Length: 281
Ligand code: PEP
Figure 1: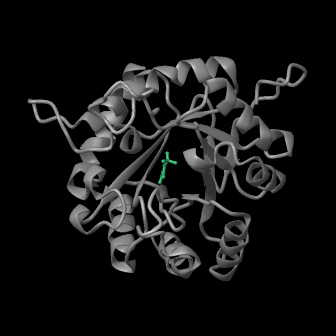
Figure 2: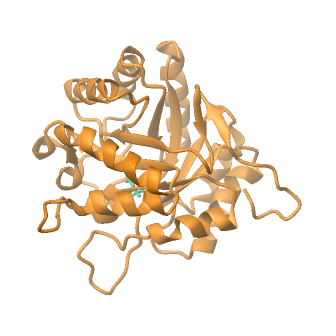
């Protein structure tokens, strides 16, 4: 991906008809966690109305508390994939935390006819789960979004991404999702989108930003613009190639991270702002 000195192949790739690279831009708006079939359908219908073909849908949720909702797991995959096919969704970003999840996704995709595809997400808590990285790197079927580890150096996170490539999978996107600091922060994490051009300079990976998990709230400036919107524009202007962002039809009913979810009525403006920032890039 850029760290092996004798290998300078580009890492742009096409997956299920969608192009990913350091010059493209893809938006993955969707549910942080799948909760009900109805919410999945409302979300996907809204995306289709906006001409979107990618989404995020969490089925396996790594939670800080063992008593918090852990995601519906494999039981929701059939309806998520069926509905994705129905609404023309081509790629779903979905975190996995264990190798069994990979097989569950593969089986469910086959059973629903493979109309849609999955981008496997390695979350920040598993950035240095090297055995999981090796297993995910060994399969070539699905591209991988690997998030930056929240408490390790950038160099260590880039090496984690390299684990995927060294095992054979070069369809890798690197995700910036904010860093933990002990300085006191108005946001959930310190927004690190200034590192978009740094990662693009150091590697050949497309770079994703996750404004939802970076900012973590719906707080906004006095002019009514949400911080999530501001930092998204900043990330796009910095050259981001992918945006992972939480929306929810009824955030108060979301089982995970409702306070940071954007409303469906905000989706058109969100996409329009991204286009304006992209044009400015
Ligand atoms: C997520 O995207 O759902 C998530 C849990 O993100 P992170 O790994 O960045 O915390």
